[in-house]
Image (cartoon, rainbow, N blue to C red; front, side, top):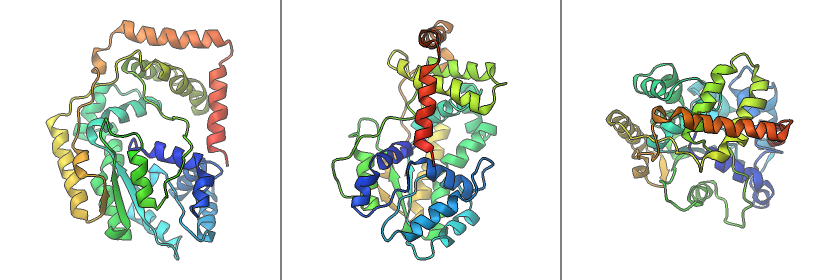
Length: 330
């Protein structure tokens, strides 16, 4: 998660027909089908039975390359990996893992948890990541790229695994996509831009979301997504130019962990597209969330309240729900 997957998924989703012209299948009608299929594969509580079988059968019937992209596939265990491989007996499987430096990943993942109902403070989250607390265990399950790559290499072979490093700040905006196309055998063309999704919040808005999570703990999950999460994704996100981003100075312990992770990838023998040096953690410019003032949080809250009152009915939330359903419908 937080390693460019949303960008790649959106680009593929918006260019399904252009990919098909190259003989490449990106199962649809939306990316949500990938999410439901993988949820079914890993037997998630919310899974729709038969979703994986449907996707599997379509891919097996396709004569050319097929792309399935879902970040939940990264940290699955060996038994699930072997099941996946067995479901495509006549297919050459290639595993692509996108990896971003941990310096940018830590603050991005804290914000992601806040946008998904977490109430962990920034300080508590950092402590948990360092000492493998509750939040830290989940973080490292998703972000231990060296372990993930080695596990996949053992199941499908190192020659069938490719790591794509996420370019550092200041790189050309298309570089990650170009690297993915190189691996997937996609020929350059005039690509349709996908709507930006999962954009980051400013520090004050992220803190406001955390407070709202505490205040709305009694809401059911559908109502939370429709109201609170939508407020963050479609209202507060527009304040990020007015707010300081979340800053993070990489501590020594994280640099040591990153060095071990990079060595694991190098020692695994998998192909690397990009440069492992790009995984050296970089500091993130911004402010420590603990230094954000009450007045700054209040400004974010007033903006959110103003939007709700101005609309009368939460039109932005209704549009967000419709957009999400359209993106993920079967």
